[in-house]
Image (cartoon, rainbow, N blue to C red; front, side, top):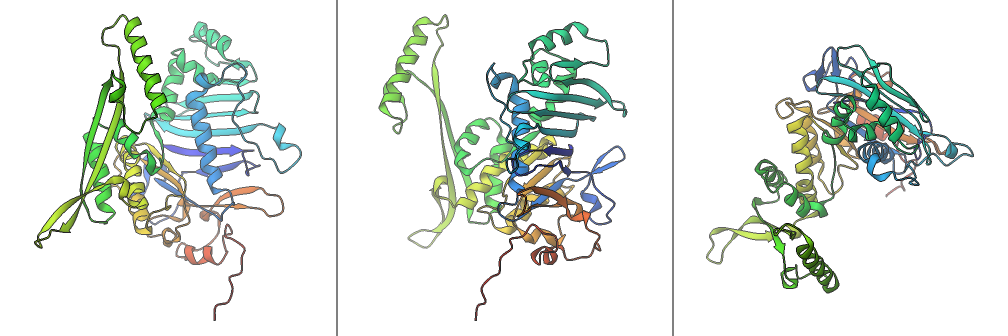
Length: 434
């Protein structure tokens, strides 16, 4: 579970910003809260804001940090730059460090991990854990000086220190060298976080989950929930060896067919294994809708999934990540969740994380949205609503919660937001229509 995410000097966010998933003392929707010892954790957080206000930059910051943590040991060759994007609307922030910090719970242990970096090097990094409730340092770093409070595993720590380049994370490199404390802490980043995928990735997702009947069934279930008349979806999946140029898909360019064919022959001639081959995966998804036959009888008619609406395909594309998060207790992160989706379908997705009936494993959802229907507080609590706004004078974005405002619990958040009480709305004057 995510407890807190901090970041600073990233894109439009110059100062430290905090997305906290720790619940405050509100009386409503308590049954939705997740439990960790004596702490209540929010299952969802919605981020609102005007176009260009910075709400998507919160998701970008989270995504960049997670991807860099997952892959830093592979992507950071000797001269590779670190892909941070500092604030640029002043004359000094571009040379200062961008910082990220995560507080999270994995396998019932609370961790705090963070790092600061410029485009050239890691300036600081640390990992703390609290296996018995009391926080203890696993390692800390200032430039290339590393500190380990405990004397255990001294030899492997020295080996890791020598292998970490200035543009690499100790955390990532330590995992490749089997340093167990870091491997346990890394599990959440590599296995517990899911990012939304575009509907163009549906074939790839079907192939990826071709042996998981639960996920394929979930894709069918979500399609039916869209209430567009889909009665069923059939998947045809093949992963056939390619040993002849004529067996490649028709839409593949001839030049690529020839190159791959030559490559297959080459590895077949040089490999010690007679089974060396190249395989290509193909998938066909067909939906079935009710219709009327010529003689007036009700009948199911096939429709290629590519011919479904963008909204239907978006919901189908979301379904594997949603179900995996719910099954594993993971975190699903989505930018502009309502794009191509009806507001009721957005509520349908959010409610799966808010209900203890469907969210039995402490899964979480973080998303940006313009869907003001969720501000009615029927599904979300006040402390689950965040706003991102940007100053016209400085270009600096800030992130803040609706619970930061001293307003009654019964306050109409939606009305107040649309009237500009909470900020983060466009400053425009609609024309008078007579």
